[in-house]
Image (cartoon, rainbow over all chains, first blue to last red; front, top):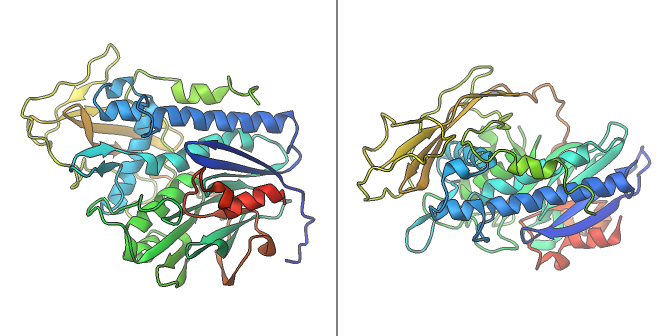
Length: 256
Length: 171
């Protein structure tokens, strides 16, 4: 890299919520002062609040209680319906491969909007960071991130993990303002399935999507991964940008 | 690190607990099924993956003092479902309305009969570049990488991840 703009030092923070690491990178005017720390605390508070409402691991979350029929829609936060509406949109767009309803071993369907919540939540959590004047940020939740960099800055350089060698990167994406999300099974095993069949994808190793916002990037990546062999064609058909790494090691850039 | 806790974030999540109407939907997303600048009416689709209950007892709409109007959908499977339709709301993207089908007290279908198609971000300049494939896998440090996007890393696995190395390096 022959940088024409002087690189500014990056201040980094890490905390954990929802069972995953939240990494923040800041550079520019507010990286370690009270404003920066307040914004970071506010971002984490948002994620903790979201976890209390949406976690399927917490028996007392609104999602768990709604799934058990203990509470009604009228007593759920409106944000839950916003998430369900987003999930429905991507269910339709993916022909049913993506679904917030998930069957268990006995064939009973449970509400699991986790596939929608992360990207949606990180977009919300990033709001206080956007208010930091003269400051670039990149906020990542377990590998899915929102990035913002001013016109005077260099873009953030996001490495796409190689699903066949998680100690290496398979691609690099320069992002000034946007989001990057990757779906795959490298770290958590078979947690993504085609909702129509219950099958775990086998032909695709990972799908990375770059988009204006993390709601779209995350949902597109997850739905495309669930579509397995159709992942690249589906992303191309909707004008998305990204990288598909296939199980056989081939890499394919998806351009709009 | 607690100074910001009482600010908007908390109110954002818990601000309005008594309505099923979704006020703010960030539908700035464009798909190939949409035309520009029009409002589409999506069908209320029951997902193929949902197993219909054999319960034949009609369920009533959850009733609370502020419950929204409930209508029996003409297209719903008879007597086993209740369709709850929220009021149409204006958002920065246009009008939005959400409709839920409830069977046996659980959500079996979510439909958005009215939502905006205008993409409020059309004017925004494309501000990310195409991904560049790396010919040979290389370490994060040698490629001047700021962050790592990958399959979701758990807190347990974080310490072994590339992102962890970046965070520790403070580069």
